Image (spheres, rainbow, N blue to C red):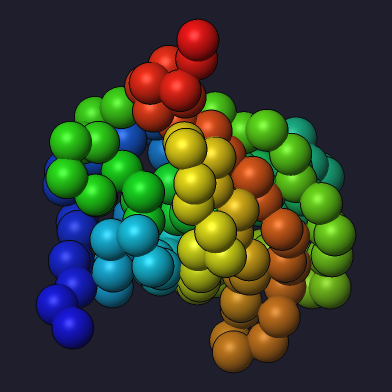
Length: 152
């Protein structure tokens, strides 16, 4: 099965988040409609480390979920006809935070499409640091362009 590899400039072609709110540096394997994985290298100069928390910097939980969401969206946005479209977060459930994500870490993200029907996608996503689970969530995203096709 063929997969895509996307550097930051390619990622920007598929989804609309931009720096400083882009939380993916590289997508190592994207199987359109199936799964996506990649990483974000975190350095001390990330804007959120200055304020969360001084003297004990770590990536805020909601930004971890945003990173999982952005990686998840790539599996749908790489399907034919979806490049550059917007996906919106509908829900994030079963949130688990197990390990701090600190400066100097490589935040590795894996996301699997659990279902995708009529523009609504459900993903099982997890973030890892040094091969240890840092966070996980069940994420639901909507592709408005696709939803419009089914409105009456």
